[in-house]
Image (cartoon, rainbow over all chains, first blue to last red; front, side, top):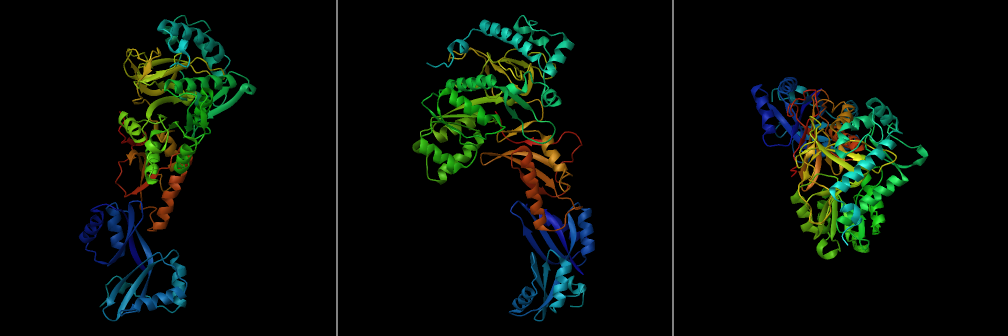
Length: 146
Length: 434
């Protein structure tokens, strides 16, 4: 079970930096991130970090609205067409996601696609049936031997 | 002829006072027929004829909005319900609304005051008058409608909003005069520009009547400039019928308040004693012509003052200055009267919003906006953008249902709003008034 840390933030100068400085002080490494924004001056920051539990607690202690959100992290090959291959299979499995971001695990070999969905249980079930391979948590958080 | 009713409008002060004393004693007689005043007058030993001169009005007790609410709906009614032909009521579902009943003669008198007011602002029966204002329980719609008809204009009951249709009506029927809230006219002008139209060239407008919302002298001048019209201030409140209480004449130097229909006092809101003539205090009004629901010494909560000196127009009725504020926490946005408690009541029912929030009224691009900032608490934050988006829409929708103004809901980070101290709801009004 892989988790991203989701943080509410206002779309204002310096607000993202306040979050990264809190994480820096806690010795947390950021592996991947996306920012999705609404049209009303706020957005949600999604982070994959070395220690999601600690990151979430630290941010909460510093008065941020942060939460752990389970995501599906799927393996793909790191070459041209790798993402296209994967997305074809995800579409065939009829999985709809609201946010997605990727990261290289092993250059030239393995990468992953993290997807955020409405119903994670259902999504994992479909991925399994489609024979898609999930990345082990340690590799997601970047704590493995790569 | 510049007067609608010359004898009344130019009556000398002593004549005004004599008329007021006479009508006040009649009003006491009528008011006795209501449950509320009957009981109160018996307690205080007030009888018709008690008042010998106008200064003695201070012997009478005040009436407040709370009294109206506490005796909702019929406690102030003096006549059989078969004689009542209309009611107007405040918006909202929080607590009892403020409701005012009218007999047919009440409506006739009210229409006459509106007609007199419009005539005072230079509008004549040859004018085509477009009433750009919500009809229904709000008094601005029907109140102006009946007055326009009494005056004899061609009336266009256009209602509020739909700027494209408003402009089409103006062009199709050659509208010469209109009533609207000032903030709407800024928006309407923008639509004129988008259509590559210039109201000065492409309409026959010459007079606007603006009111129901606080605005500055600069805003008035800008509206006059944009549309090439004269814009006159209108003042009214539903407890005193609605529009037609006080109106500017063509000298635009304060609002003549119709003293044959109302006794007007300005009192110190703390001591409730009259303030010296010309000083700011709370406006207190007594109806003199109303049958179904007379109100005696009603505390309007509006702060204003009498303007000293005579008006060159020849009307003798005192002139009121613009309303400079309120003695309660009510505020007005887009012509709607809003109490912070109404908004609090709505938000309290939405668990995600119940924690900490702040109400701000701000003029953005010439529009008064009601902004509600709500802190996103981690207890209910799920990281789902769509959910938060839906939540803001739900809040905006529910607040609109209550106060009739659609707010802008701004989600903010926890800890960014001042902590509420469990007392009055915080409202920050950033509009520049006066």
